[in-house]
Length: 158
Image (tube, rainbow, N blue to C red; front, side, top):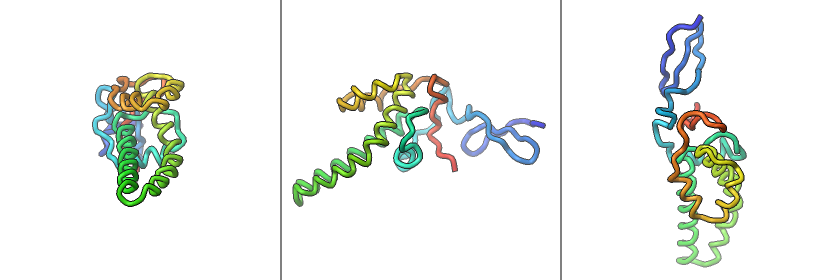
């Protein structure tokens, strides 16, 4: 027997069935088909490097992809700055980071394209040029459901 639905702390609608609460579609976690809040830097990196390391399915919000690019910029700036101050040989430490971050960046870019309603194959020309990757951060995602699933909520599940 279902009773009146309630809203949990994440803003998700939950239907009460008997003794346990069963979460339903996260309609209230997104307003107008877009996330209510920006994903934090820590959550974005956790999502890209741990949770969705090899996931091309679904969608990535502007903040998730944007924070990933900020992380790359920080690591590059620190490595290049220290390399120019201390020793140019330190630049070699950026290479392992590039190799480690290539897969999550590729998949996050595919998910970001999905959020904009674009197809996977567009990731190849975009990866060859840095400017289109930055434009993906600025591009608005589609409202509501699209062919790649529901809009991102920018909230990690416990």
